[in-house]
Length: 381
Ligand SMILES: [Zn+2]
Image (tube, rainbow, N blue to C red; front, side, top):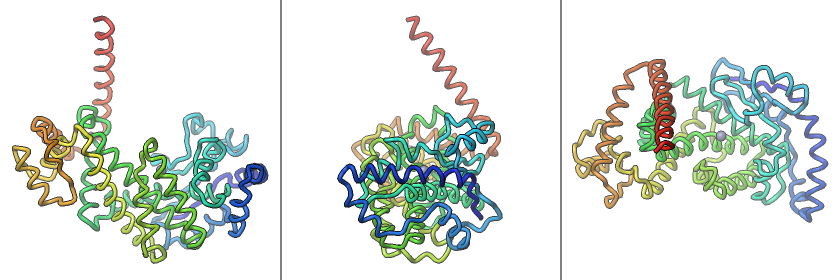
């Protein structure tokens, strides 16, 4: 895989203007200390890191015959205009779009008061300049991109190096169908959400941290990664990325400089993010009504096939010792619903992707229609 930046010159011009005003406002705010500290480190521009990534492809990127575009979408009037016919900028955010397979970087991530760049600096021990913030953003989105590409290549969501990763792979293939099917996802939606966020965002964050280490060196990367960790931990209540534990494990492990190639990075990330996804599923499960539904889904999807909840949880405990069961929270009828959902999923799994997405769209439409009808009657009654 190769990377190509689009409109990088528009970004560079924007930064020239912004650098002065930002540094000025920091000094004015008596934060001169932070700024002086950060001057110890040489700044890297996005152009620098993209060149370095392309020159070290086998170490950092999956081996694929593909050029990934990083599009700086709206950093000048001209680039904004050029992009308009293709994408509606109003709804676009900084992101990797899996359907287009491009990364979009938008100005608002860096200039809006409550957006990433400004928020991150609240948690940084020395000032993180705008190029570094942009590089963090690029590397995070690149993490999503390489995850998507390697998933397509291997046909597996995560590398199955551990039982936890195998379990998450199964749970995520369930999610692929269930997320748009209201009648199923309504019941274990929180668990899917945690599993998905902790692994997808966790993948992107860990990939970003590993590459920061390689590109900036351990000294500077250390304080940037610490800031990302503190930021993610503090905003988790609202952001719900569940990635801070994975970042902390990386930050405190001896692995930090030891990856020889992309596959080693991929295996390592798969192990760490699945471990912490399950940790968060376990600890948050206690407060979910759907705890028994979840156990019912496991019971049928993994072929445990027990009829009553008590014997099922015993077998689940033997087979998946990392899944916590709250015995005081077991509700037999919820467990049975979970079993039915799991069975339905198994039947649907035999359908091909197009058939499945047709069914999913149909389910969403039916659900919307049901809501309209029930609202209509509610108003009348
Ligand atoms: Zn992300």
